[in-house]
Length: 83
Image 1 (cartoon, one colour):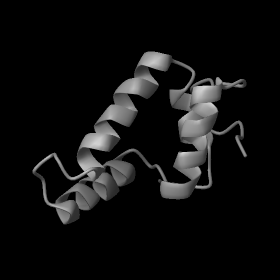
Image 2: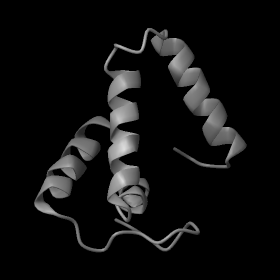
Image 3: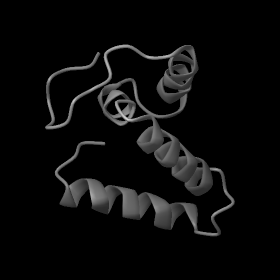
């Protein structure tokens, strides 16, 4: 579902590990793979992002889930992102 929107290159080919991660992404996040493929163009960036997501949404961050969601919405709004 990747499209040409955005300013950064997207990963065309994904490793088996990242294909499995993408399936989890579809199940738990979005049916849109543009953000995932953009992050996957740099393995270290993808690792850091997925680690952050695991911390924030896994419940061990200590932050209230409603506060995390408000921050996510605000960041998306500031960056004109529909995610």
